[in-house]
Length: 181
Image: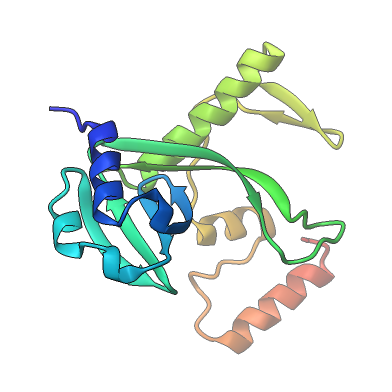
């Protein structure tokens, strides 16, 4: 049976002392973060019994609830970080965050490939794009490389064969001097 999110939200509200007891609230896909005005009004035992609440903990003055009931969840959100701005870092951006039960990094690579190549095909009508004068083929079936394999293929350094830091530094300096990057 599917989780009744409206009922879950009402029960959470009832057990934290109502909406008036919430100073601020934020959510991140499966996590609900609440700053509570009066923690004495929070019924933690009852919160743990709410259908859909999979976990609860307190961190940095926040009551955080893990909400479950779906195998896959996602959030597309505007993010603002107060870290300053320079030509390479914009403090405001949009992110996509997703979680999938029983998935591993191979599944996540397949999803990312599908989103990017699908968007190119839908928007441009082709998998071929040009970026800064370089033609890029986004046709699905992208190669999967470990970081060691990618460095070996594109830079010419086999970090799998390097045994210590000094050898790694020397190999990187040689590759840089040879114009590899």
